[in-house]
Image (tube, rainbow, N blue to C red):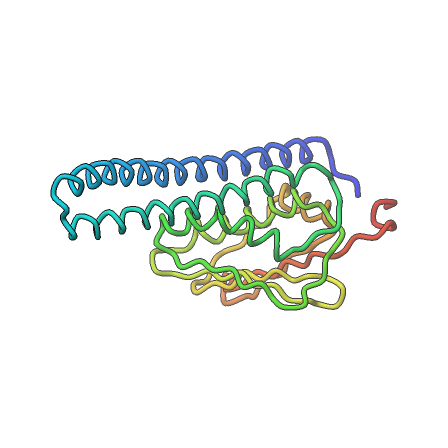
Length: 227
């Protein structure tokens, strides 16, 4: 598993870039949620003051809706913060036993924003009975993001992207299913990342492009690290 220094450095740079972009999307979403919470709290204050003075049932109903809105946003923020905590700790160990489904669902909480901005339908469908694998969680999430970005850059409004997982012998297959064909250019840096996780990428070809990407993620054995 030998990778030249230039490619290794480029890979590290892209990993940091991936984290930065994910955190930027996260911070924008948190600002939006907190802005709505702040606005709703201001309305609550006005409604309470008004209802105390007038005993207006309609105002009380609006106040209840505002309270429900605040509660929903708090739940959303708590869920995203939970995923952020998981994402932040993925780099604690280089190789460990992990769930691919869990990694994808964790990253989905951040990626969905980018799809929403382009008005693209984006879903993750975790397969059943997907076995845990021994691999590099942080690097896998980086690869998931790069493949997502590759697809998103070439999809237009109202297209769809679905990510599914299945078991293929002893490996987990992560499939990026597209409603529109894209061109896949596998860079040296992406290939280096695939090499470090022992994975490989297959494309479903059309005439000059593809409508699906299949990423195989194996469970690494001690033999892999001795190569």
